[in-house]
Amino acid sequence: MRTVAELRTVLAPLRAAGVGFVPTMGALHEGHLSLLRAARNDTGTVVLSIFVNPTQFGEAADLDAYPRTEAADVALAAEAGVDVVFAPSVAEMYPAGFATTVSVGGAITGTLEGAERGRAHFDGVATVVSKLLLAVQPDRAYFGAKDAQQVVVVRRMVADLGIPVEIVTRPTSRDADGLARSSRNTRLSPADRTVAAAIPRALRAAQDAFADGIRDPRSLTDTVRAELVGLSPEYVELVDADSLDPIREIEGPALLALAVRVGQVRLIDNVVLVPGVDERIALGPAERSHA
Image 1 (cartoon, rainbow, N blue to C red):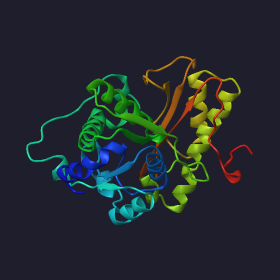
Image 2: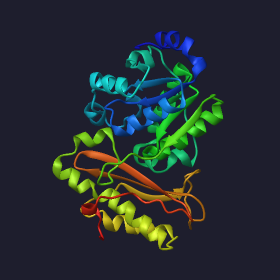
Image 3: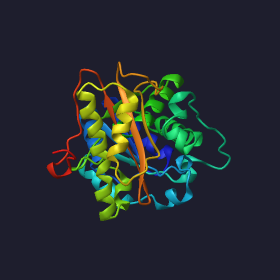
Image 4: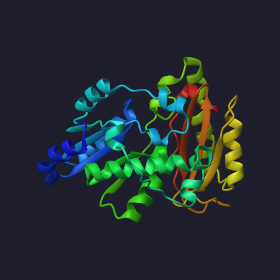
């Protein structure tokens, strides 16, 4: 499907069975497929969107370099049981004269990615996700926990605008070495890939410290930074998992998030630390820093 009109015509007779929606920018990997499988399990009709949204990229080079593999994506979608693929053009999503922006305010867009990439990034995210939700009108929309701040922003937007959809968050999908799966990973050289494995190790080290009783945010973020050998992170922050406000001590669910450039590729990752809950990144034996 290339247009919203076509999409709505196809979906009209299928809505009674329930519609599950997975929005993506394409270059599908196992993380996306896990979301599609969840949607397939929960709903009668599964919709996948493929749209590389230009308004959320701050760097033209990053937009140009983003992988575009539509034919392969459609084949993978078919194997995953997707019923409808919506792949609109930029002109379809942002027609001539388009002048509206959906903007979510407060700490949830001003920190972490918002602080590094600028407010326009999440304005772009909120605007395109709202347009996609209005086009598909799903019962459920599925997002991965790797993009934790994006999920918080989308939940806030949906609640504030009264969009009738359930936002479902699924765990971060990881490779055997613990690296979070991302479409950007295809741009890592073999050497960069080895260096990038320090990211999940660093987060795992913080999880280990947390399990040992460390609750001071500075100590935990310092633990992460110490493990990122040879890397200079853009940020390593520990914030409230729901509000994204800074915290002085972990008393409830806390989001430990980071962003780091490996070669020419910018990677993000996170874990949620919850008192009384011990869920740690699984690392292959060769990747453990203190085996």
